Length: 330
Image (cartoon, rainbow, N blue to C red; front, top):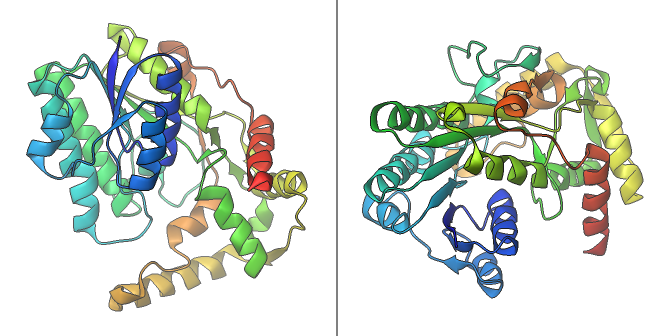
C-alpha cells in the first residue's frame, strides 16, 4: 500500500486529493490548519497531524515513512506581510524538501502557481519556458517562485525526484474562494466588467488538478525536475463565464461597466491606504485582482500533455454544473 503525505489536506485542493487517494486505497496522512475539516477527513480514513510546517523538526517528522509527498500547503492571499508569506511558502517548502531528502521519499509533487507569470500585460498561451517578469506582482507570487527554486535545486543537487505543477484558477464544489466571491460581489453591488468583460479566463476544474498530480507520481525520469502548466485549456470570456455560471445557479446577474484604468487607479489607492493602516486587513480591491479579470493570461498546457499525459477530463461546463448543484444544495 502506497503511503502518502498531503500538506494542506484541509484546504480545497488538498481535501480533494485526500479523498481520491482514500478511494484508490492509499495510506493517507495529512497536515492542515482547519481541525473541523481535518476531523471530516479522519472519518474517511485520513490520518491527520496538525504539524507546523514552519517548524523544521515538525515538517521533517511529517515526511517520515512516506513514499510520496504532495505539498499543497501555502499562504495564497493576494495581500499580507512578506514575512508571513516567506514563512508559509518558502521556509515550509524548504523544511518539506529537507524531510523528503532525510527520509528518502520517492517523489515530491509540489503545487506552485501561474501567478508567477503575471506582469499586468496580456499574454496568450504562456509556456513554462517563457521569461518571467523581473518583479513579481505580489508577495504570494514572489515566495511561490522562491519555493519552486528550492524544489528545483533539491532535484539538481541532491536528486530529489520532484514534479511541480502550476494550476490556473481552480474551481469546483466546496470552493470557498473563486465563485463564492463573485456571488457575493453580485449580491452587494454587481460584478464589475473591465474591458467589457472580454478578457479570456483560464480555469481548471479541481479533479483535473488531482489527475495531474497523480500523473506526476507515475511520470518517467525524463519528466522530473520540471514545472508544468495545468488548466482546462478552455479560455472563456469573463462575461460569458458569468452568464453560464449564474444561469446554472438561477440567480440574476448584475453587472456594471467600469473602465480598466479607473479600476486600476482605485485599486492602487486602496493598496496605499491599507499599507498605511495594516489593521484594516485586506483591501477589497488590489491591482492583481483587477488585472486577473481584465488582462488575458492563458496557459499553454502542451508540456503537461506530452510529458505527463495530462488531459482535462472534466470540462468547464461540466464543472460549472457540478458547482451549481453543490451550491444550490447548501
